[in-house]
Amino acid sequence: MNQAAFHAFYEQTSKKLWAYLLRICGEVEIAKDILQESYLRFLEKPPQKQDFPAMQGYLYTIATRLNLDRLKRHRRWQFRFC
Image 1 (cartoon, rainbow, N blue to C red):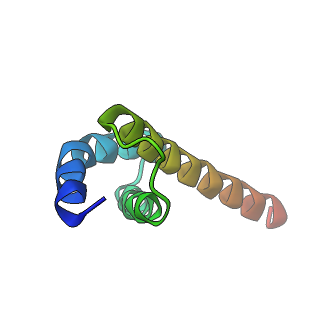
Image 2: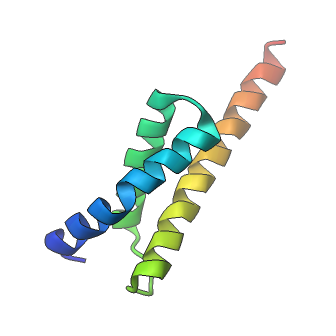
Image 3: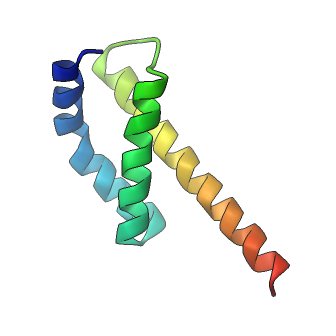
C-alpha cells in the first residue's frame, strides 16, 4: 500500500474506529493509544486482500485484539495485587 492509498484509507476509517474504541474501552487516552497501534500493526503486516471491506475488517480485528490484550493485562495486575 502506497502512502496516498494509506492516507485515503485512514481518512475513511479513523473517525469510526476512534468512536468504536472509545465505546469499548471508555477512556480517551487508551483509545488514542490503541488507534495509533492499530494502524502501525496494519502497516507492518497488511491484509492479504486489498479491497476496502477486507482491510477495514482486518483493522477492526487488530484494534479489538489490542483492547482485549489490554484488559487481560489489567485483570492479571489487579489479581496479583488485591
